[in-house]
Image (cartoon, rainbow, N blue to C red; front, top):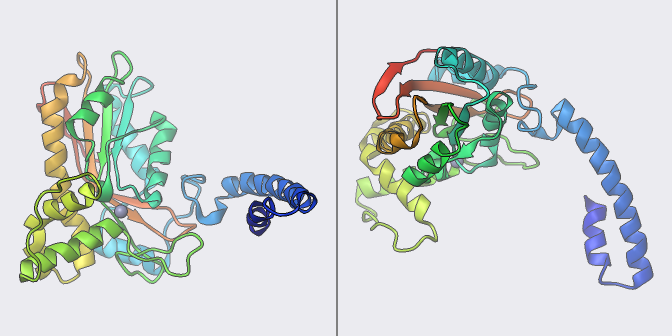
Amino acid sequence: VGTIALATTGAAGPAHAAKAVVEKASDTKKFVGAAFAIGAVAGLFGSKTLGAGTEGLATGATITKINEVFPGALPNKSLVSKATKALKKYDYGSDSLIATSFCADEVNRCLEAELGKVFTDNFSMGGLAGFPFGGVTSFGAMAAHIPDGGSCLVVFGPHVGVDSAGSVGTVERRGRANGGACCGSAVAASGYVASVLSGDTEKAKPPADALDAQQSFVGSLLLPHAARLDKASDKMVELPYALYDAQKEMMTDVVTSAAGAVAGSGKIAVMGGIQINTPPGQSDYYLPLSFEVYDNTGTKIEDLTL
Ligand SMILES: [Zn+2]
């Protein structure tokens, strides 16, 4: 990486020097390419997306904490396998489409990769903190992409890190000495709602432009849960549960308003829960909290269990 960076600055210098550096960089790229391919297979570099499902289960303080505060959480791989089995009765298969609504944070892509092994590429309805900010339009567009005669599966939820010391609301990140907040958007919103609750900050008006509109809405959608967060013994544990409730309400509104966009007897399965991000080398988890099947009139047909 250092050599490639040097090649960039070297290109501005004398031609012969730049050429030598570029040749060296080219060799380095070949090496990096080969190492990257091996790393992808071995799940190195801490990328859970490249090695989706190849990580071991969570260990130590991480799994102890997950079992304590998110009981029922499943490793991504088991979640996808159980969900696929549960959907067999509705003929989900190669003519199904997967849509997700997860936070923009790159730590959330590994669950999409795992789901993708069964359902191929996902339609993305999500935005900051996992809210389905793509709204009714994104659902309608997704529905119009379902293969003829098929159904869709929508998976949504907030995310939360549990680090190797068992701390909730943070996680180790690739190449960084300090992990930082996870979910950062959610933690920022929880600060905003606490400040409104205490009277230190005035409730913000709806955003007038798009510049930071999603974060503004994360704050306003979390605001009804401010007192609940304030009373919680561990706010970082309560936060994803509160966000789930807010997102469930929004997703149900989206699905029931736009269900008619799904053709014929196609079904809409909607799974909601909390995505749990763990340290590199350990599988991420997902705590399923609802798994509903709707028809295209927006009527709920069944509550599935995993
Ligand atoms: Zn996030």
